Image 1 (tube, rainbow, N blue to C red):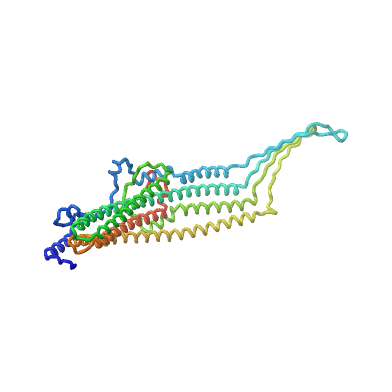
Image 2: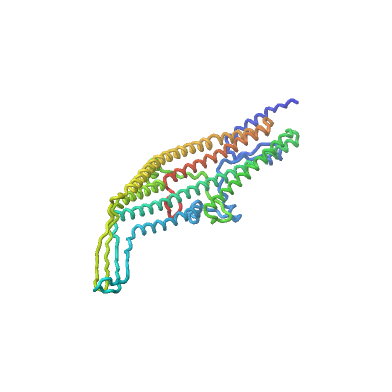
Length: 456
């Protein structure tokens, strides 16, 4: 059967509708149809604005809405790994106390009997006592105390490193939740639009204007759209569970997160970030503390050749004589000059120095790589938001108008809608990549290592 040609008036209406659709905002357009039922079932094109956080609906449903600062504060207060790292601070303080302690004095006491074996000797009891005190080499003691203090500084930097990684992980998971929630909103809008399209198709099939396979195709698209929407919602809930695990299960039973992926506060320049990373990165500072500890251990190994002087005072008493003695004991490094200990400490110091230099150079490369990743993600966001999404919206409006006037089939409408959905999801993914790159930069710069009064 040959397809009837549209009259000139219909073509004029189609052209005018397409031009008006390109000029008006997407949400302000309504399908133009003469039939009242078709007008009631006409789909509204989805808005490209980022979905807002459902704060009002969450409150009405008993869901508590948390800000990012509140979430980070809860995680820092209850995370088990951070609490375990903080407990090592007590161990380090005890180590300093042990390294600063002086050697205890040593007391000796002895008793016996004196038996006379020669004529004129007086038998009786014999008693003696002695006190000895080690006066340690001041250089060795100072080196031991310096090593303990450097170890304590390394412990503080290990705590800062744990906190920096924990805040980074929390912010990244929070951004992932915002992404999944936005994807769920986009797929929900797409599902609602497909259901409206299916109602229109059913009306056209019932009136004999379209073949039945168009209904089958629309039903199949709805099944896939519903699966995408449910998957995105489940992924959002799964991210909430991950955040609750970081907080040791202390988050509310029903909660949501305020914010959106469009938050893009200004960052310092690349030169400033490189300077901050070199000065504030907790991993570099921990390695520096280890290097200082190794240097102190090397000094202690050299000073251990002369460990100290031991003073002794004693007295022995028998029935005839009372004998008092004062002595000094010194260990002379003749057989063991501590060359092995000195070589071991020197090798460890050299190893840590090379490790610190290599990590500093690697850190600079990581900061530059993250900066470029941020620039790429921002360019992608700009291209998608200012070009691809708008073009996809215009193509969908043209396909809808052409379908209403019989110039296109349902497959063209579904393809145009699929392209728009893909563009919107790609835009959300690009905005998430912007947030991920920002978090990576701030983590490398050590901006989460400190414990502020208000979480960052």
